[in-house]
Length: 285
Image (cartoon, rainbow, N blue to C red):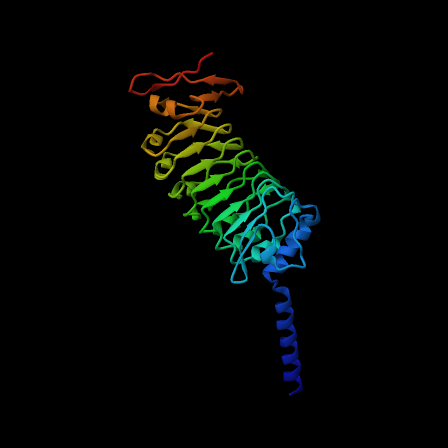
């Protein structure tokens, strides 16, 4: 009997410890405030007041559903505890001074529709866990120092409409799963270190209106399948190493008229025939 009672006390203590680990939404926001030098924010929070009064915080049924702290002088690391804001639908930390890596815990925010961490100093690779955010419509990570490759399972983001990861140090090829993201409207991957070819499967992205791959190391044939994207309004695939055939229609669609970089790193303008038929592209001297 004594052993059973002792076991009961141990279990009770264990449950108590687990309960203490679970933080309220307000406690999580306090962690963010402390981790990012809240006393130096442009618009500060009064931590003695209810979080409903805090600037940039939207609350519904005592749960934080939106957090907009853009351009507010947040300095430091993004705390992993943010991944416990289970009801969060929008996280906007655009244009601050955040550093370190993107916490993998953000992949727990299953209700998230908007994730904007752009214009900071974030480093390391985009965590694979971001691909768990199947409700995400906007992913903006541009103007950071992110490296590594795009997550292989990025195609899981079937509701994504905007993918903006330009001006980073992303390497490698576009993942095969990318070409199954049929909700994509805007893709901005320019000014990185990406390589490989652009698949003809780009034709799957029937909602695409803006495609920018400018200033990377892509090579191979410019997919004629791009012509199948009737909604494509703007394209910039210049300053790469593409070659092969191209049509006047595609050349006119490209913002910089097919300016490419050869193996010596020298920019040149591709000659494009004015006729309707396709002709080989020849580099000008």
